[in-house]
Length: 236
Image 1 (cartoon, rainbow, N blue to C red):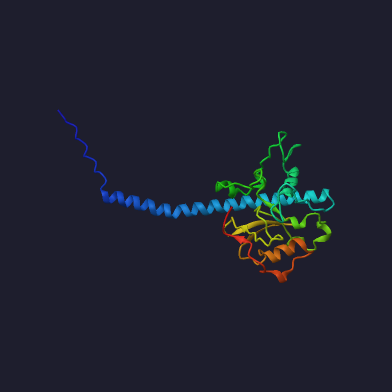
Image 2 (cartoon, rainbow, N blue to C red):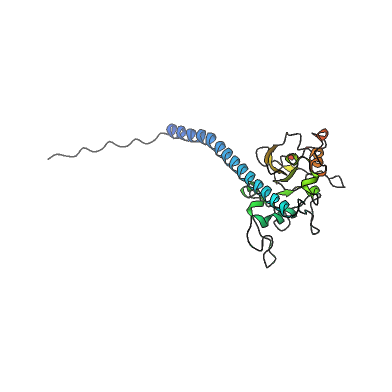
């Protein structure tokens, strides 16, 4: 009678082999995780740029319907120095259909992802502390001006960017900064509709030049790098 040969016993992993596998996994994780983080960061920046561009298109539509007059940005209820989100709320009518584009019938504020930088949600942070409002901001110094006649260089006039923090000083001299959320840069749409990724090292991103671009008919390049740097590594 033929007997079946028994299978040889399986050899267990030794401690050295297990440690080697763990070490390899650790090395791969150290390589892959930063790459995934970089890809995610770039995707967020691209999405934010698209949203800022959409707001720029909405602004152009608003200007066409209001004879070139910039939307009001002041709100008597609350204000962050020289800049609020009021104008951005008015732009919603061009990309959010329906009779109610800011407030619901019950008085609840309508949250719209278009005017909120995606990096805010990913970091688990809150947006504007009042009513959970828009995160993007608009230059209030430009309010009430006829953009078609006042600004001689619309391609150099920043109007909307990815931060609600005020960009320049008020009468009290309090310094405000803009968070560099996208690898040391922020997204900004200019009056002519084009979007730029402005790095913190850019001399335009200083209080002197930024203020002159909003107030004057053309930016004062003598103020490049003057005042204080607006870019901040503190990311709200």
